[in-house]
Length: 295
Image (tube, rainbow, N blue to C red; front, side, top):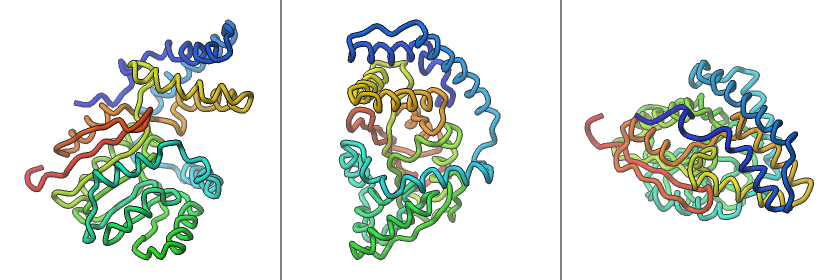
């Protein structure tokens, strides 16, 4: 059974020193004791946050939480494309290649944003259901689709955790850089729901950042590279380090899971032929097929 908790999956106490050590290397300085104390305090709060998360009902967002998420992503809609991650095109290309859409396929794109994945995959499918919590993101997607003459996209404004679709009605479910925002129990729930939505032989393809919080060499390499990149940007970058690491450790918005955990979740849901591929740095793709018979 896949490990759906973080116990044993990372070393909390080492992550602050990894971050501070990377910054020290960049600036050729030594992190002071006060900074270390601060990170240790964040660590303790992160542990408490994990315990609270375990007692939260799956798939449930309060009205206030949904409204907050919608406002957050709507504020980012117009500038979203300008902040695209380097190499994101490679991830999108691999998701599409693995999904292998056909002109008779009905596809769902979870957390579609402004259409980085929706638009190119729509050109290869019968239709795409584009799902996002932000109306503004969906408006940007609609503008792009109209400009490109793409007319086979149906938008749904909803939280991924709350989405319901007819059982056995979908050929392919895809998602790109969206599910790391979900709590781990809700990631599991979405995988199980995707299994239900898919027709026998249907495919689930997940492209996302996939790494843990310091337990493996790969984790530490990814974290160090991201911290170093921000640190070199000066004061603005330092603020990003503080903000993103806090989110990461407290599991607020930034909740990536490792590739091995994603593989386990897909296998537990019943998917077969489950595989994972590292595309570059933190970016990876995991995919599986719903059996044509059996479970």
